[in-house]
Amino acid sequence: MTHLISLQDLNRKQVESILEMSAILKQKYRDNDRPQPLAGYFLTQIFDKPSLRTRTSFEAAMVNLGGSGLFMTSEEAGLNGRESLEDVARVLSGYTDVITIRTFSHQFIVDFAKYSSVPVINALSDELHPCQALADILTIREAFGKDPQDRRLVYIGDGNNVAASLCNITAILGIPMTVCTPDNYRLSEQFLASYQAAYPDADLVQTADVSEAVNDACVLYTDVWASMGQEKEAEQRKQIFAPYQINEEVLAAAPNDCKFLHCLPAKRGLEVTDGVMESPQSMVFQQAENRMHIARGLFHWLLVK
Ligand code: CP
Ligand code: NVA
Image (spheres, rainbow, N blue to C red):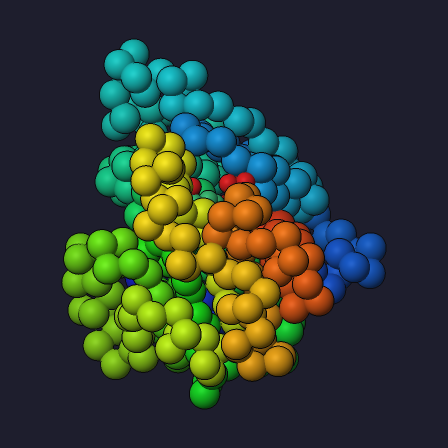
């Protein structure tokens, strides 16, 4: 059974297949050609955190491909004490063809997948956000026509789930990556241990210095300073992360053809200014749209034999 829980579970060929299928299906969608290979298929989504892009793009993708979907919280699924995870996973597998899960604990998704007989997709955990990283690469390829090999994808902000999945996918594809964070908000030690074991030759630079980071950037990327579940830390983080805002000055210090990406939702005025979000270098809405094309490519890759 193939799941998508961490990109570290996939090899380069598998990642390329998902990206390629997504690009093909995107072009078809543009041409109003909407094949429905998943007619009669059913998607279940279990989400314990809010979502605009992930929830909607997965459901739209499944409907586009001919199937349909259902959304519930883990409480509604009975996972808050009514029934065990082991039982819920096996029961749901009998009704559904693919399950997406967005929750806090990464281990919860790993455990659920152990008992599921259908593919489980990580729709974001506290540790990783693999589908976002796939959409980000699709967007970068659309901008540059290829993967950057001698320029860097530069992530500035919190060393969070989005940053970790970007590290995984850039390592798989051989894209040089810089992660620029305040010292106490670096990528977690646990993530770095798994990353270094999986990709001993990856080109990853970690720094706290924004001006050093932006020099040879082909993409500047940021995310919220306080992720879902960290709301109580938001005020403190605002002070600590203030020097890490991507504003017009930071964008101007990067090469002229540098693009700006953000997984969204954005807190305008904090991690990014309005000016950068709305600048011609910003690709954030194309990037958001690409979540659906990646969802279609991923469902196709997982479910169409
Ligand atoms: N980027 C992203 O995952 O957005 P949502 O939280 O709205 O799904
Ligand atoms: N790091 C953010 C990403 C939201 C898509 C969070 O986990 O809230």
